[in-house]
Length: 256
Image 1 (tube, helix red, strand yellow):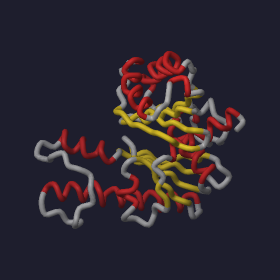
Image 2 (spheres, rainbow, N blue to C red):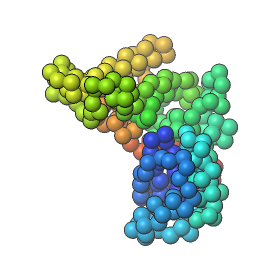
Image 3 (cartoon, rainbow, N blue to C red):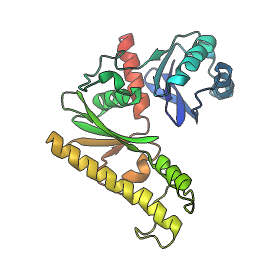
């Protein structure tokens, strides 16, 4: 059994695979100072409910964009599962060519998403990941990672407005009934929703022009479905894209 761990800036996901089948996944808030035993306290009852023992886990693979959390995760894996985890990085994978000025800067999550798209979908492609940042990753037809775009995430933008503008409240993320808001909350929700629809469509249009290609566009992340509902630019939503990429990297390493 494989445990795949995706450590994002906001949330950390723990997933279990039985061969190629995703059987369980759980999410907790990312806290870089979370201790080894605190991870165990969080996971133990969940594993018990799933009737899984620590010893059932044969391998651990990690995608992390929070370096301060890596040591705690490594120690947790060694202590409770007696396994040294494999950390994805530009230097640790060979499934994809990274055509960047500084390949070592590429985040593990973006590498993993690109590999998942190559394995399960088609190229050329753009991956839109709605996380703490909203990222756009471009994969060429031959599977080369060409670069991308990083924009502030939706929730990050809401928090910034709320904290920097005294009279603006913190609002929920949802599609408003009208584009033109007739009160502050509706106006903010329209900006967060339709503003990001415009950002998505505009960036994808410019990427297509620059690549001179009709790219396949797939979205992932917690808000992907909400935004995909009202733009034809996004052709596919896959909430488990990162986990699928981690599984593929693990399979290649093990020769499966």
